[in-house]
Image 1 (cartoon, one colour):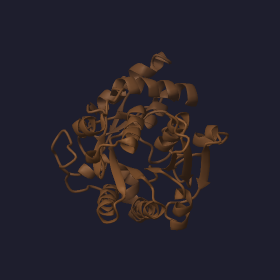
Image 2 (tube, rainbow, N blue to C red):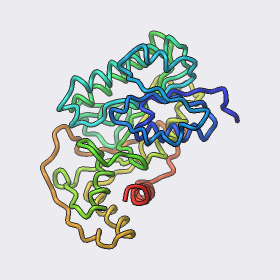
Image 3 (cartoon, rainbow, N blue to C red):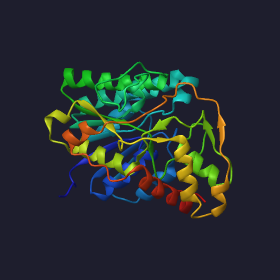
Length: 326
């Protein structure tokens, strides 16, 4: 099926998840507009697409309503990825996190309503589960947020629901669980754990695990996330619209196991890596001890079928880092 008439706005399109979405939907023949201000994204992530006639780049900030309106002109679907991620960053600077994640999101919703967009699919977060101890995490059962970041992502869900009810705009939230894979930035104070550990091990440095390493996460490979975005964007199931879905693999791995797998996979490229010692530091403020998603709702309503287990995805990610960043 040709998608030549279908246009997508990907906010945060120069970031890790956004650039992977740009690449995928361009390969499917969509017209893709990328909006990014490079606060956490990178020009080199979208460089390969700049020659594509179906790709349009707007350098701008979602905190500016006029910029959002310009970017949304003539757009069918929005995949909203732009946000300031990271729990520690939000604890250090809650004001900016709120401005980007809440006010910026509200601008996108408001402009989408005004421009007659078909559907807004937005990046929600597993941090919304907060202090709820029940496992696996089921969409309808959440706790109290444990960080400013978690509050902002929960507020996104509340705003999306109100916009659906009040203005009839279609929204679907995807609660991402620890996404990882190619193009995830290993540098900076708020780098995610997998690329950070990969780079440290490739440089023969000892990774520092926060706490005893028994905290666990539902690490989710990027290709599963792309699949969820496509399913959410195109679903014609009325029960799938104006709700939220866990976006994960549905399995959990401790940080200790993560580092052990990384050492095994990286030692295929450099055998010295398997002897690197691991250091344990203090627990991190605002961290949830365990995270495991139920993906039953996504399977039932969207036909979600994640192709990559944690280990298969990790092998792919390690290979990408070794080939691109060594």
